[in-house]
Length: 114
Image (cartoon, rainbow, N blue to C red; front, top):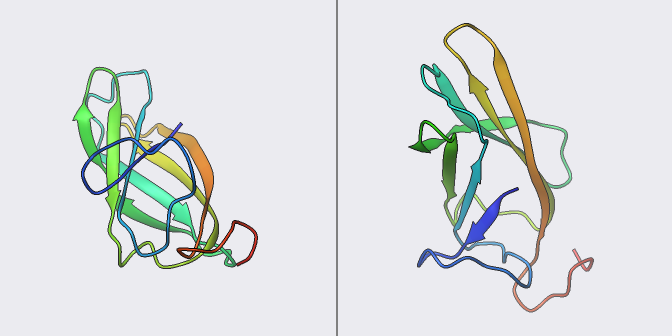
């Protein structure tokens, strides 16, 4: 599961992320990612089938705690986003962790109006 955080680092527990604001997307895999050669945050923006990746930050190797800070400029589309983490281990095994889908809204607009 992804935790959404506002720019001050506070966990957002209600409402919907607003387009043009930054988000911290964090998760804990629950297994060591020692020796990982790549840790990425993958996403699909609303209204597209294109997949892209950003390099994620490892917070704790033994537990697999990782995050990615989505900038306000990157968070530019209203609608349903899908996100996951991809970890490539040193032995070539790939861990794909479906993190979450969420809906981003234009400020002042109810979800579903985009």
